[in-house]
Image (cartoon, rainbow, N blue to C red; front, top):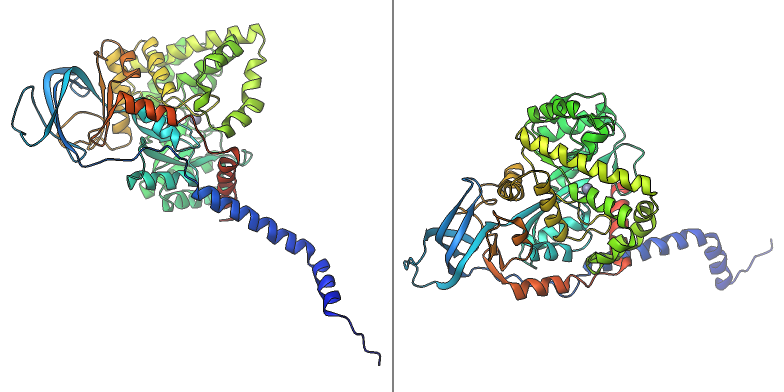
Length: 485
Ligand SMILES: [Zn+2]
């Protein structure tokens, strides 16, 4: 018998050659995990600290009372540990131990909500806050957002309150950043998973198989989990009763595209709104996003030149430049003109919803396609006003209506003793012109006073961003997690 003597080195080489693909795969997976780990640890500089627990009296102010729809003049707000402790007439001297700030006849409005945003970095919440938007509802939740919400709850940095939707539940042919629903059983499992991960609500697309659509809503109802639906109508083949009790219905553009079948049909519009009204569910019109796209189509690079692009995340800038923006910039004059006609009709839809007293919610779709946080919320408010809402009605749509929809009106949405001191201070009366809210004199967040200079600092710091790769890695992690869990 001939002994085969193979050196250790040769054996090692043979082994490595045989295992090359496995080793390559392991290295690749390790690199991905190192990237993800680093991206998750990355926190951008410039986030502002939370200073809580202060006691002070804000004297000589006028209060915008959104529930009573009136202004309480010459008042004093007593704020203690982040909460409105008392509301007294101006000049009251009961709280001698508290610091007194002279409000100089300023106006105090409850903190604003933006009920439809999509953001990929923490600074967008600081930027929202700098615009008086003290609460946002994130409408495409990723795992990174769960971490942000935890940090905000721990008072680690200063930003708007965050209400968080699940990943978008959509049909099986959706893009990877959405959550495809494959069967009614799968739908129920996905709702359970979102509930377990503590997302606040399910975001549900409408273009789905009706059985899957109904399974999502049924399971969410059983678990007491809120659902917000894209499009103010049921999935094709399902019934209106499934919309009862939802948190909100998104986008009036979908009334035109869905219920009105792409027709400017005003009679049918009235009938459609009767059905929506009967559900009792609020509607988030999101006029701002359509208006923005129409301006891109009509004014093209002249419009882009005026946008505050310095506030946008690099992933958004790169991906949207390629895929979304270019499409609108290459519209023909005929297509551009059509967007103006359609935009006017969308405002008519809002007017009809308002006429039939459907509860409306301010939601901008900011974060999408070059729409900056906070700035877009005010644009949405201006467009609601252009649709026929009074200034006071718009403020209601930005404050108590969202608080009611989110079921947090015990603590938020109006100025009342015992509620959280999330407030916007303006020199002029916002119920005469909501534009005064765009540049607040100060914002109070959880009782923390933020002067105009501090708000400007927040805005300035929102101009620096995590790199493209940090954000992209977090999105990849989200996709990996959902496909392998
Ligand atoms: Zn959206």
